[in-house]
Length: 331
Ligand SMILES: C[S@@+](CC[C@H](N)C(=O)[O-])C[C@H]1O[C@@H](n2cnc3c(N)ncnc32)[C@H](O)[C@@H]1O
Image 1: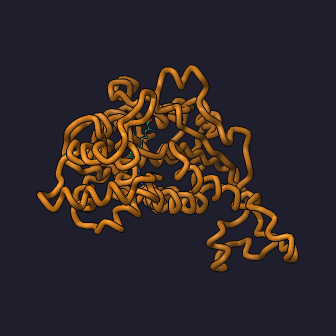
Image 2 (image 1 turned 60 degrees about the vertical axis):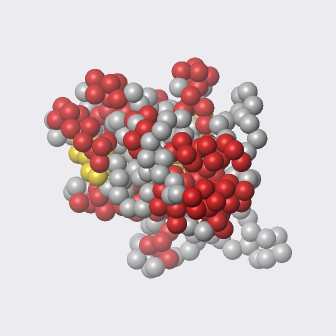
């Protein structure tokens, strides 16, 4: 099975650390919610008699998985869908509960390296950025939103300080003709921002990140996926999430702080109220970054961070709030 993955050009990030957290054992079932080129799935399947449900919203990733599925002897299933639905997808595959969930957030090298997908400001292509290849594209956003809405996206999802100036420049340019190409947009940003100095990121990096997040509702997807993982992990089940920037990591960090009972002691002026019983516990592999060798070998690894936790016996938080879970009471 290795040929298909290696030929894809996508090098899985923090692979040993992720597998260390997931600790796949005989007979266990895992969800790889960001299948991509299957790097994590393949490593999980190396443990005998494990089963993997691979999910990806990109139809190209699902099509490319066919040789891996065929070679897996029935142990790998792949499903096109969103990881926010991972519990429902696993249930449809016959697994109401699973032993591990892994997410490797963001775009794959295959997506970035294909100019036709429109993710890269380095190569000319249609201004698309839709992982699912469906729904409104980046071109739809830049050509229809007003300057304030555009600036809001650039500021919130790209942390772009020049968001208003870039948004105004986009609105002026599209008054001449609609923007359709990646390099057109990159050119507008480059003209607004000061020239890139040695060692700095390309000026269009933050604008492209922001639009990609907006087009694919990436942050909303992460929030919903964490809740879905909480619902379908067995007691003792492992959660491993690899993020690539602070906006993603903050969501995972806050979720785990709340669910492991570490989200702060509240105000010292108010009486102490015991929080709900934790639905996750901390594990030793939590909060890891790539070592020097991996950072040198794989530039994507430089900003990667692994967050990890293990499911406890208690019901998921939402189920408890709605009074459906077994552990409906507060401690
Ligand atoms: C960084 S790559 C994963 C690479 C994979 N771990 C490997 O080793 O090949 C991220 C993948 O997740 C997919 N993806 C991103 N957001 C998704 C979502 N909300 N639901 C399902 N798949 C998603 C992307 O289409 C992409 O193929």
